[in-house]
Structure formats: structure tokens, C-alpha cells
Image (cartoon, rainbow, N blue to C red; front, side, top):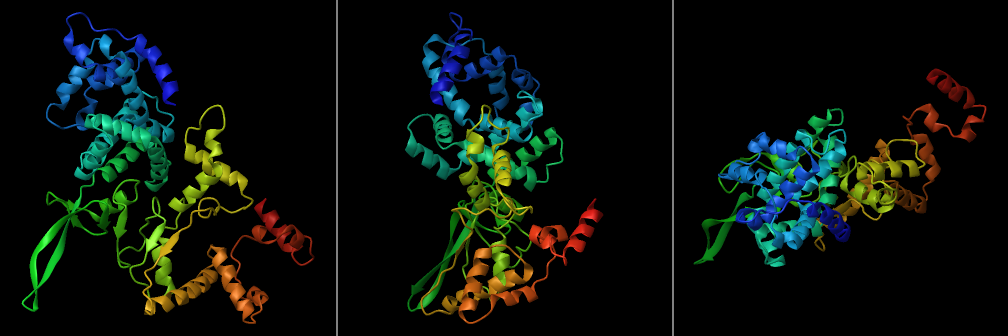
Length: 454
């Protein structure tokens, strides 16, 4: 891909004006002026958008406006920077958070032109949110280990090498439905997705206080609490950030429901009813086991939802060819993969592939089982009880149900007796097979159902 981009960009770069003799600033600043000049040469509205001052609400650092003024006043690039400029432009095209955001947002708002001010403003907001992420201490330390280049160049290389584009494509596909933007106008979808992404990207580390308990002279002594940064793991609660500001509970949840940090969310069973954590999570670690199967189902149900993380991983594993094949790439790769999965299923309901899709990735249950503890026996009881609970409510995950039935049959139970316990709530047309339709008993009912449905 880099080779193809190099050839394409080389043609465009060759047509750019060169710096005039004595114009040292243009020759020295070829790194940023080439991007502005390419926009001018392409005849798009990016330069007009910058001149209009629409970016003002995005960047508020001192001197930022002066940088933009200098950017749009570029006249030419230096001769000595041609090869280096080409490499830089390839890195920008593949890994710039702003460029990746433009492509990702336009996938869910294809009606907008590439240089539409609404699209440019949305991408600029997302890129500014990424600055908060990449300015974190731990992020700087990580990228400094990868390269000795200027930090902003290391960011570009890191994003390109680890496919930030694919991350954002998946994220925006979820956000359109997760934020209720499906029926909105293209401009509203772009703005709504960008705002949600910025909220997740801009969350600041929380301040955690750890009790420092020591033994002195035969008794416990509480020292001054140790303060720590909570960035990779947070608890679902109202928090204080490093600057003393409040971090709302909803902000913590939005950040966890993104592909970015925090990667671990600690919560209790109380207060999380109705909250979903499925967008980028498919593992539940039970610090302790609940006393009944309903509470266990409530916990694990938080990550088993519509188009959950495990489901998307399985859909991508099975139908990635829907994106790779074809002359033109699909506008939304995730919509194309789900459409392919839907066509491939024989099921007539709407559960597959959106709620259930079998594959190598499962919703994982992790429980610390200390030997000879109550938890060890309780887990087995909970699993058996949970199977019966799901059976009573007609829920999916039939593999657990079949395993339970096999154990019952082994104990002398006749599995056919379950027919008398079933309550069918599906439409009649979905219940009767072709064979049942041909029988004398079911034909009148099925015919009436078809007649009433027209």
C-alpha cells in the first residue's frame, strides 16, 4: 500500500510550485506547507474552510490561529525536501488521526462531499481529541520507545502501523446506532459521532487513593494515602481527575465503550442495571459469585447485546471477504460484513447475525475459584440453574441447554416431556414447518394465518 501511495503522491507532488529564491521559510517548512499546497492544487474547499475560521472552536491553544494563518499562506516547497516530503505524505495518508477520521466519518455519512465543511469540522474535533490521548504521560513514554524521531512523526508512524483506520471504521459503525443517529441527517450524524468520540478520547486519568497501612509496635498504623493515576482501569463511579475536576459516571462508561482507554471497568451489581458494556468488551470477571442465576445473567448480559464485541469479531472472521473482494471497497465495511452474514444464514428471525453469531470468540466468564471454597461448588450450581432460567424465558445459547438435557437424559429423564412445558410465542407462520402444514390438524390454522397476513 505504501508503494502505491508513493507513486500516486509523487505525481501530485511534482506539480506543486517550488519555493522562490530567497524564500527560506517555504524551503524550511516543506513538512507542513506541502499538505496545504496539495489541497489548493486539488481545488477542494479545505483552504476556504481554514480561512473562514471554522476551526476556531477546535483548537484553543495560544498561537494556534497564527499557525493556521501561516499554513494557508504557503507559496511553495523546497527542492531539498521532495523525497522526505513524499515519505511524510504517505505517513499522513495512512496514519494521521484527522485523515483517518475524515474517511471513517464519511463512511456513515456518504452524502457529504469530501471537502464539506461539516465533515472537515467533525474530523478536526476528533483529531483534537486525539491530541489529549497522545499527550498523556504513559502514551508519550510508549511511543518514545518505538522511535527517536520527533514525537508527532512517531504518532503518525504508530497510527499507520497499527491501523488506526480500521479502529475508527469499527467505532463509527457502532456509534451511529449506539447514539441513535440512524435517522438523522448526514451533517447531524457526522457531528454526533464526532462529539461522542471526543468525549471518549478526552477523558482524563482519575485520581485513586490507596490506603497505606503498616504495622508498627504491634499495631496497625494508617499513613497518608498513596495517590495513583487511574488510566487503564477505572471504576464506574463519579471520579476526580488529576486537576480535581469531576468526571461524570456517563463519561467513564462512554470511554470504556470505545476502543480506547480505560480497558478495565470495575463495577458492582448495584447501579449497573440497564447499562450496556458490550461495544468493546466480551469478558466478565466475577470478583465474587452472586447468590442466584438471575443476578449472574444480569452481570453477563451487560456484554451480550446487539452487535456486541464477540459478535463483530466472529462476523469479521467469517465474512471479511465481503470487504476484500469486489472492484470498489464498500462505503461501510462493517455494514457489508453484516449484510453478508445475514445473507449466509438460514434463520428467518432477526437474532442472527446481530444478537447471535457463532465463531471462535465467545463471551467469556472468569471466576476466581479458590480450592475448597464455597465459590467452587456454587459456580456449578449457578451454571445449572442459569440453563433452566434461560430455558424458561426461551433465551439463546442452546449449547448450554443441550448439555443440561444430556445430563438429565442420563439420569433417566425423558427429554420429550419438555414438549408439554413449552410456551410458543412466535408467529404461527414461523412455528409450522412445511410438513406440519400438510397435516390435517395444522393446515386450517396456517391457512388462516396466511389469509389474515394477506
